[in-house]
Amino acid sequence: MRLLVLAVVLVAVPGEVVATNGTSLRVPVGWHAAVSKTPACDPLRLIVASSAPLRIVDGTVRPPTRGNVTVLLLEDRFKIDQPHNAPPRPVHFVVRWNELREITSICGNPKPPAYMYWFRTKGRYLGFIVYPAGTISPATRAKTLALMDSLRVSPS
Image (cartoon, rainbow, N blue to C red; front, side):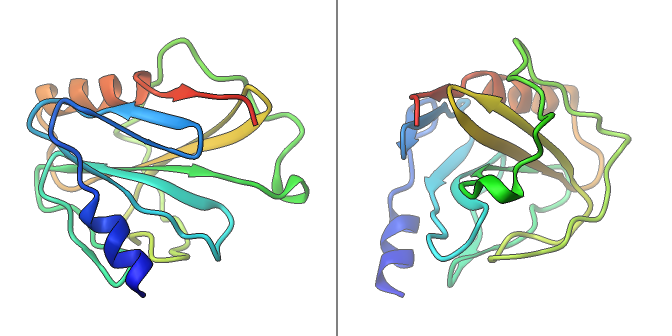
């Protein structure tokens, strides 16, 4: 329990880099992010970022408020779970804002409809889950994509 509280306290200054487990994201100015690991789960949640203040209670990420987006960076560590045909990391990520789907809520991740994209990079299997709430402005959509494109990954 203390580790989860500590992880949430490690909130990044907007515009700064949040890093853990050989991954990093540059947080857009005005956004909030934290290392938020779920070590007992697979996929492992690494980083949570949001256009609104983070709402993480006892390791559970609360859905974003209307007009905001929450993004999770995850890593699937067990080879048995990883599809063999996962695409490589794209040069630029895309969010299909009109193709959200219900995702089973596990390990304290939100339940609302979301966009999920898994990919391979540097011998690792990573994924983003994007949770938009309500109508998302073009500026917030652009910052969401900039956050995702800022991902840096070290080999496993």
